Length: 194
Image (cartoon, rainbow, N blue to C red; front, side):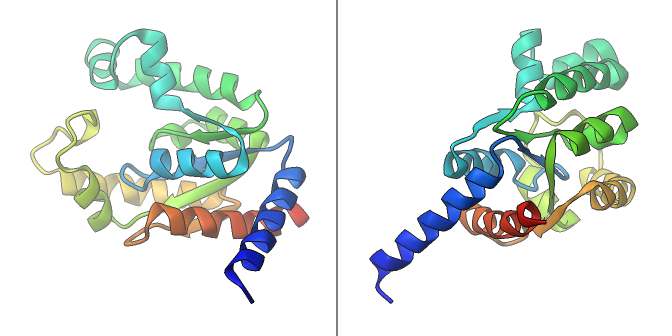
């Protein structure tokens, strides 16, 4: 089979997936460093959807970055803002939504996320998370003496929640964002056909 023919078949496949998902969103959940923002942008481009990152929307609305919000309002203040944004974005259609790692902690967020579309858990091991995040100063929870220990503790708490919430689970360790997007598209066709 020629490359041109294969590309045509893949394009038809993607168009079918898009048609099946016209009124559904894709919600990306997972820990810090799993690739939600990078993969979300690429996935939205492939599907012709709008991409939103809940943390970025919060920063834009507040006119301040996440660490500042944590410093001034504490984690509880940030989580209240996060819940409001998730509820608002979940009411839209044709959206790929990347959430913050802790968004799934609040039951109302889990309900909103599950109700607004297909939930994809981008799973990354603690080693991979640490590799991708240990130099990032924009992650308030990791500004600790032992960030790897923090990541391990968060993973132990959050992994079961992500797993229970997810319609699709994709391991992102040592995979290119492009290959993860292809895996998601492939799995979405099975979810939307059900």
